[in-house]
Image (tube, rainbow over the protein chains, first blue to last red):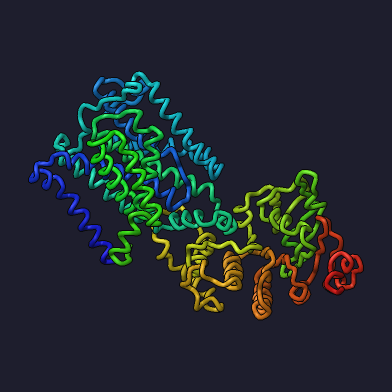
Length: 324
Length: 249
């Protein structure tokens, strides 16, 4: 237990030092890369809650990531133009408003999709979540007001009172704090009464129903919580890249989130973050040399899945000798 | 005496097959009512209709005076229905203790809380320890369920069902696959359990049925061919022919 806390603090400090390390070594791109990896890690971790802990294989998770991002983009668009969304909701560039708004809106989208798709199971569930994500994708492609397939520029990062958000390092630290808070939230969540019920449903849904649990309601709540996490990640990503586009919710993005989860370790807390870090850095490194970086990534995934059941986290556990 | 369970005219067809054919039966409070019949008689189909996993085409099921015919399985549990499965159905990644904890937690409620700690719910775990303390499973409390022997799984299922504090317990072949000693232990456990709830027992082990049951209903091809006390059933020529005869021969 103590060791787990020490490990968490050590990782947090190491990540907090990244901007300084980048400055000393002159590798200014590190901040951008690690920041993105953290955000992808959050999105993958949110997927992992329903996939790894809940056994719901959602193949449309990028939809909530993209919707969260578009909330930031659209609010900024109206803020810059001095107009109102649907003539009702004024725009804003305040992060204290845009992030909660992104969480709420993506949660509502997840509630809609979950309410319908959770009535099915197995392969149908995978296909229906994918179909809904594609619907959202094409919806945003067709929204010419918000840039259509070109997406929407966010000229300036959202502001936070008292912080210079134009400073890359400051923005990175905001992302890091969000990622750490989200990690702690998930850690709490899986140990909660609700988290235990979800773990029970994954193992044996029929048994849980026989214990008096209305599994549909619990699964839907988990699905919404998970969508909210992805929405938060998407909102941060749009702040980080100052750009939102339908590509954020492309089905291949959903697949990447899933690969991150499997690579890092299904049903583990740190796994999705590790998976996101590894996948993203491999992607960035290989993309310098070849367009066909997917091929080596596929081989890597095969190796991990075949040799280490439980992903990279199980390898790490083997090396450090147990512990969480 | 009041009926805990009252089934009237229950019918279920699958295509051309009538799995449950106009079945009526009652279970009184404090009673063990056994349901017997050859393989394929529709016993499990009947159990699954009482639990709500299958909905009947016609007929009515009343639990403690409330019509539950159309209720979802979980809502029936809330009204006091507990069950065990013919093929044990447990949470295989968890320990014996955690399985029992889940049963108690599910009954205790408050399960949408996301900021508490399930492991710190003292009332839940006190109750788990209490129900384990009288059981042979006490020494196996921290063993993952996947590593349990068959008989132990059957015991755990019964403990879980009892910790839901049901008013009616549906037991689907609790003796199946048990050795002689284990069967005897299970019979003792059921005798103890009947003090707290009525039991509808589906069982092939005739020795156990005659040792436990107050009344017996015989199901053949989805139809009730006889119902009555253990003595009546033992003496009934139709039953002997349809079912018991095979064993006497």
